[in-house]
Image (cartoon, rainbow, N blue to C red; front, side):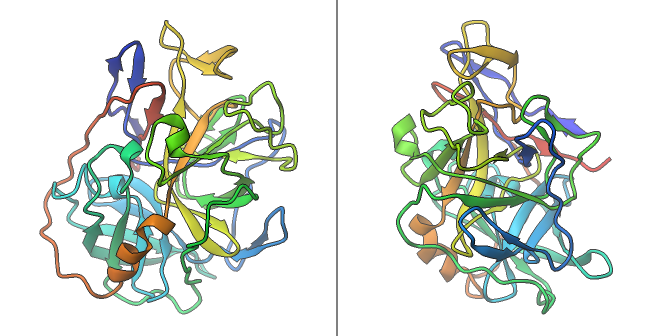
Length: 330
């Protein structure tokens, strides 16, 4: 079940924080690319990624997100908004962590979390990162991922997450393609966030499926035939470049008309009054390069934080509708 978090108008625009994001298949006739145990995925530029270290997260508060195993085998990188409203605010008592296993999911638990001190609750200003500490070492079969610390790239990237899926025409579909299945696909970053008035530490792409009709950012990805977007449940999941984590899934956006409808593309047809991984919409990842020193420093080094209950915060942002929506197990 989806829980609506907020609807705050600002200058005729709306913004909602999104506690979980998912992948929606770009081709209306395609099936979502489901990942099974031991799958190795080759992206459009021939890079191979083992996705066994991409994990499903469920908090004790009932929120669903995605994360990635870091090299120490105990630390999970995810989005801060999956754990807390802002740095220093309350957190869930525990998070269940599920790895793909040969005979089914392998469960672990985290009760220790480290939130980037730059996290204000507003994804557009950056810092939306957290590291979870597992109570036991991850399965030896689970891939460990290093961080990509090079310059931003416009080459194809591979996105993965446990969220809802669907198509760019219908949007994410919780009934048919619900939370809890690992899926993957490809897209690319078109700009850093400063091009849209956001933090330069955000990596931003659009969902155009190779056509100018749905091109929200002005760069058509004709070399990626079955492009994907993010949706509810993918928050905190990884984007990979050259086999390393380059970005952590943060939020999806759309621009709006005077009536509060998402424009798909911004100058064309509107499908909905809310963003739901439709063609023409925008996704943003937090770049790990800018925060690599902090992430590396939290692997088996930080002191225990204080735990308390989770609070969600809605924030308004000029120019786009940002969505982060909780997924609660039924």
